[in-house]
Image (cartoon, rainbow over all chains, first blue to last red; front, side):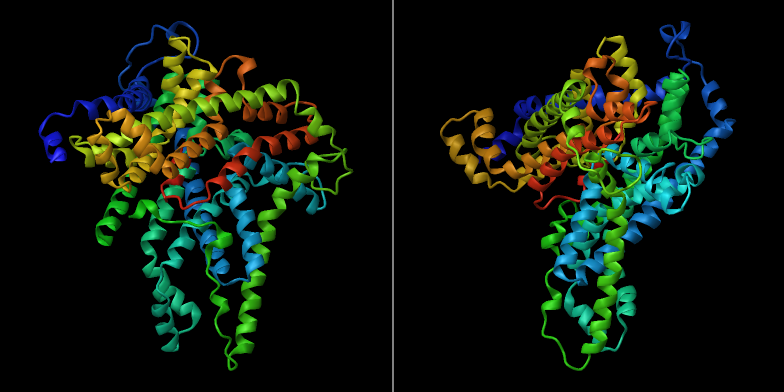
Amino acid sequence: MMEGDAAEKPDGVAFLLLLPTVILLLALFVGPVLYAFYLGLTNIALMGPTARHFHFTGMSNLHRLVHDSLFWKSLKLTAIFVAASAIVGVTVVGMALAVLIQHAVAWLRAAVGAIVVVAWMLPPLTAALIWYAFSTTGGTLSLLGGSQADVLNTFPMFVVCLANIWATAGFSMLVLSAGLRSVPTEVLEAGRMEGASRWRVFWSLTIPIIQPTIVTNILLVTLLSLANFSLIYIMTGGGPGNATNILPIYSYQQALVFGKLGYGALLGDVVVIIATIFAYLYVRVSRATRVAAA
Amino acid sequence: MTQSIAVRSPATAAQPLAGAVPEETSSAAERRESLIVNGLLAVLGIMFLAPLLWIFFASVDVNASWALSWPHFTLAHFREVTRGDFLVSLVNTLLLSLVASAVSTIAAILGGYALSRRRVPLADGLMVTILFLTGIPLAIMIVPVFQVYAQFNLLNLWATGVFLGVCSLPFALWLIKTGMDAVPKELEEAARMEQASVLQIILYVTVPVALPSIFAALIYSFINAWGAFLPPLVLISDQSQITGPIKIYGLIGNSDVRYGDIAAFSLIYSLPVVILYILMSRPFSGGFSMGGAVKG
């Protein structure tokens, strides 16, 4: 067999075919990530003498990180943003939409589905602009309040979480709808026969059956929100008074606004480490599900 | 396979469960239930629609502001934002997205073929690594890329396009490899008998059959680059090369805010993404969003 023959020899063709991918990933993916871990431990600056002649400064940036109260605040804000918008907001709102859409009349289903999916697929800048217009002074929300109240400035974290939920719920809705459709109707009918209420059937039958989908959804939305630089940066720039300064923004500020490239890189490393944990969980969950399905 | 959770567009999504034979006995209760369900969904729908309305109204309103108001109709904003600087920034966005999608799709076709058809040592491990990489937010790792690009004088549109292509590469590779796995091997064996070269086989046999997954990867990479904010903000130093989102961002911060122009331009800028998405509304995989993680 030809396949067998090919397997015996070292496959030079496969190597050549993989070469562009490997070079690109090493040069612009793995390389930058590793380089960032090195830069994070140097005194490199955007301008001035240490821009070109920077050197390894050992633990000095790490020492600074541990004693940087703004870093800890930023870490906490990142956790709040991700938890509120990804876990609570998007999953709960996405689930509500998925369930309601399953039982609603056709035209309403089509209309609401379209609106929610459009909100999800809009470019990040457009979503941020829409929410900025909605919540800033003179925007729609402030006029509803009857005054020139600046909602965005008064409840910044709350508003950016709402914006993130608005922009991401469509994704959760699609994923969870697929999960709901995979639940065998006989199981639910059997539950109803036993006299269980719809609510009871949902909690005791539907949720456990689609649990893997829910977990995958939470992990994906967490990764999406964790890296969400544009939405918050465009709406608030991390302010007011650092109230929405999540790690990706703080990293950008330190590196490219204050010119401390080294420290900024270190802050970026923290995001990558957190993302690594969630990406690892995601790979484990999706492999486990695949094995179970096989 | 989890990766290919089929997700249909919501319009065609839920089967008409309600189309079942109505039962006389519980009809009152069911009517009440359906009223609650439809009512709740309508409220949610209005909440999602409310912020969105502004961009449509303001784009055609003579007296546009940040607030939602009934427009005094004009097309002046659209005329204003389809020429000059605005048009240049849209062309830049297009070039950036074309470079990014070409880089990621071509590399992913070749690499995906190798992983799908050839014996590659540790292929399983590689695929797991690729899946893992789709979750790493490369686009916010801007400092090292900036540092390297600055050293080699690469702070321009083209090099930024290549970087954005690499951001999308892991997921494009995953999509195309999975798509090619579904192509029957017999098709290629016939071509191999005819002494076709590997590149010929890829180009004339495998690619045409795996086209849906290749298109999905292409559109995915394109949309990602089109929406990218942080990489072009940091990595493009030449003002004449700035892309649409950077242009809009600059307008928001202006002292004299031209609300109508901003709304009209954002609409034009967002339209291609909506169109491409509709074109792609075929089953796509759960990992789709993973790549969304590179939204910078």
